Length: 283
Image 1 (tube, rainbow, N blue to C red):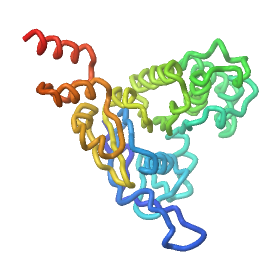
Image 2 (image 1 turned 30 degrees about the vertical axis):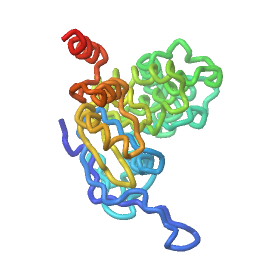
Image 3 (image 1 turned 30 degrees about the horizontal axis):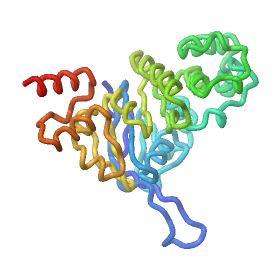
Image 4 (image 1 turned 180 degrees about the horizontal axis):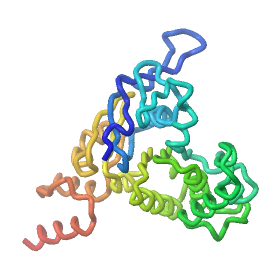
């Protein structure tokens, strides 16, 4: 793995107030980290923790107030890098309706490649490949507004895939979806990650976080925890103190431990939890 594929060095971001300096908001406070190529990273944190600001810095939609963000060695502060950075790190946002502009699914998917001057034959190939990859090729001639929420987000992901990105960043892209829609999107993300695409997924849903290679927990503009899902979520009380839930499997074990059991708190798989509980009950 290319370890410094994405690198943040002493990054701060301040939202400036039009009124007075005292009302400025520091959204990120001295963030330093590296993300390797091909990782599946989930970022969690309560509202106002800085995670959406973090996502936008990776796509150069925001530029650090202090410090540096590098994408494949490209400094986001250098204007000449912006288009290549945004092609490299595609962004999918929370509301699928806000990012769809085409009158048909295939027209919307083609929008990005058309705007960077890709030849028509190549666009046709990219659009077909992207729609097949996310499983909505059969809807290519449909108006996007007639699709479900999960399908619309897959259209958004297809539009990013047609740009041939190395990394896809999702800023709470499953937040407005029902459970079926969330599963649709997560299935696509896992498949794309299996093909080598780096995934950075901002979410409130802990069942999505357990699918990741790495979980980053943010609070008050700082990284408070960073590790595998089991490493992070076994710190139940620390996670809850930051206003977050833990996965249901760990919540169950945690509650049982409060009643006198002594289960490990790093088990994410419900089948393994059932085995542990059955063994403890049967002695």
